[in-house]
Length: 81
Image (cartoon, rainbow, N blue to C red; front, side, top):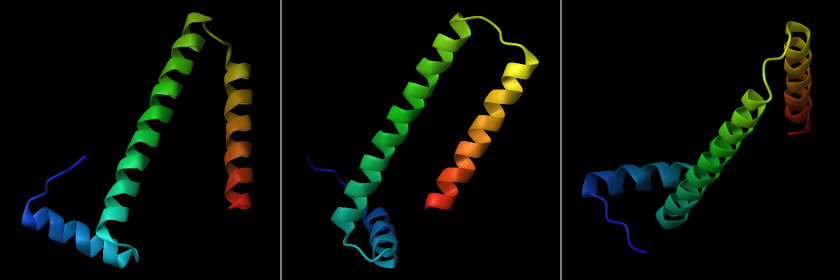
C-alpha cells in the first residue's frame, strides 16, 4: 500500500515523528493501526449498547452500581499503568 501526502503534510508528520523519537514510516503506521483499534472498540461498544438497549430499561440503582464499577475499574487500571 502506498499513501501520498503533500509536502506540507509530510513535513508535519516528520516533525511529530521526530519529537516522538521514531521515523515517519513507523509513526504513520502506528497512527493508522491506533485508528483501526479505536474504531473497532467504538463499534464493539455500540454493539454492546444495542444489545443492552434491546434488554430494556434498567432502574436507577442498577445504573449507579454499573457506573461505580466502571469508575473502580478505571481507577484500578490507572494505578496499574
